[in-house]
Amino acid sequence: MSLPLVRRLLLANIVSALALAAAAQSTPSTALLVLSKQDHTLAIVDPATLKALARVPVGDDPHEVVASADGRTAYVSNYGFGRFHTLTVVDLDGQKQKGVIDLGALHGPHGLHFQQGKVWFTAEAAKAIGSYDPATGKIDWIMGTGQNRTHMIYVFPDAKKILTTNVSSATVTILEHTEGPAGMPPGPPPGAQPPSGQPQWQGAGVPPPGTVGRQGGPPPGPPGGDWSETVIPVGRGSEGFDVTPDLKQAWVANAWDGTISVIDIDAKKVAATLAANARGANRLKFTPDGKLALVSAGPELVIFDVASQKEVKRLTIGHGSGGVLIQPDGERAYVACSGDAYVVVVDMKKLEITGRVEAGGNPDGLAWAVRQ
Image: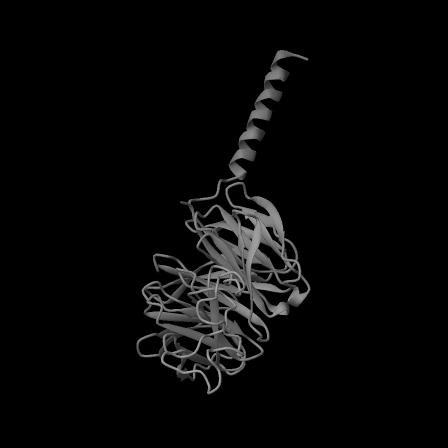
């Protein structure tokens, strides 16, 4: 082989290697994550260019996605309307599937939230919610809701209060962590006296005073406390919801009624029902400052002023809408247009559509990943 030919082959190899390196662009420190239910992929999108840098296989019927607090890992729920029971894990730095979490009997995982270092999820077919601890690789908590189609979940920052929407039961569940051992029956009210003929409170599951923990007495309950549950009736088809930044209200989009239920979280009751004209409402999200609420409803994005509870604008976005996501700085919002294979970009100052992300077939779940 002649020397010029060797040089040409070497140069060609170098150019090919450089082209491959350029094509495999690294994940930016801030990334938009978009699920394609049709392609079974997670697109890692650069929000500066609105271009997908990588598409990672994530298994069948991916519906929701959430990023870890450090922005390096994503978790995807494989839903299947109760047929599936896995979460797919994605390495965002390596732009590859990292593994699959088998949830066992917890079928139909859907809603996801990352809080206190754990992945919290709903399991529709099991009428339950749970948490997965990446540090131990185990599901460390499960709680039944007793409601039909427990769909979306919000976990408060201290993980001591949890809200879920239950689509077919037309309810919202509020779970609150209580102090003291779990499973112990409540004692008598302060100052109450035992019934006549009984020397102490017995016979109703209450141990005699001073015997808990002593030899012969019942052992103390497990550590960690228990949970109290409040079920609040709302509109039909309660699905997408969000909690205001001050943690005082939850707004619930009722897809079948086209209404929005405004819940006073402290009072645990519906404070108002808005005639939102948002039938088919899929998701609802607040802006970071809590001033606006965005609702994806069929071909439209409906925007409400939170203080007045009035509609301020209605944008036509395509043929069917899904996930809604707002940047942490509040500058832009993203809405998945499931029927059109793109995600629209909304300028939140002008309340106008300014761009699109080509996200693959039937896009839905969206998340924001910020590398720490």
